[in-house]
Image (cartoon, rainbow, N blue to C red; front, side):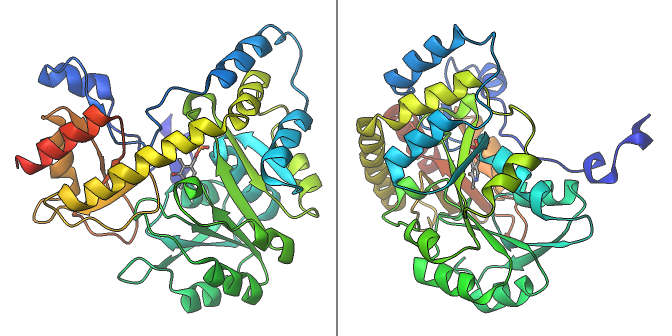
Length: 351
Ligand SMILES: *Cc1c(COP(=O)(O)O)cnc(C)c1O
């Protein structure tokens, strides 16, 4: 019956990190260092857990379809902007594509980068144009702008996954000035950088800034994402969205998490300190990162070989071989707890 499945799903899809438990069992570790998915090893903020539990008692009712309480919390956090929410930023990305792109139309992506933009666009019948980044992984703004001439929607990730570098806000501004369509700026890791792109929302009607509660806020399992959107787009996003997509428990926990600034500050401090150590202490060249992970050039090993070598030493990292327009010899290592990071450094030095 497989012939019934659309071709875009028969041979590709999102690549998940190797399951930690499997590897641990295979190599006899009672715990493994989980450095493959850029999660925050810190447990969720207590206020998030409490709010989530309280909300569970009311789940006989559908959630507020407009997510007013969450949007109010976001305005307290960021100021007076328009927001949309979804099931992870992935859910937001999917809904934006659904709202904007007709089958056969073009979506532009600056690669190498997060794979889901291309996967989701393809799944919606779009044609994806990948614009390769420069050798240092900075965005080739001229090529990106040229490609956008025939496109309604383009994706740019900053800080970028998996390379870790950021695109300066001035470059983003130039892109916004020169394209006619929408730019989706993925800010999943912006809390780990010193950059702030939010002011661009005030001057440009073609900017969407995606955010997630999965990374710095430690809520990956609850699947909450949101975006800053121009006011004109908000009602159409709501029409395109799956009804009641974001559940009330996740939304309540997200509101709780947003109130905990200590959690954010402690995570930032931890990540900054370890990012420095990863840069200085790995025997392989590391690329400067504004995120909670570092990409390493592990040549002469391939990324896949290095994943296996480190798994055998109780450390899970992500091979970058699946990323478009990136060589075979890179891995991405998340910053985890102290013992996880120490084990990674020890393992990588032992090779
Ligand atoms: C993790 C990640 C996301 C998705 O986050 P969710 O909110 O968990 O769906 C989006 N973009 C990038 C670049 C990411 O790394």
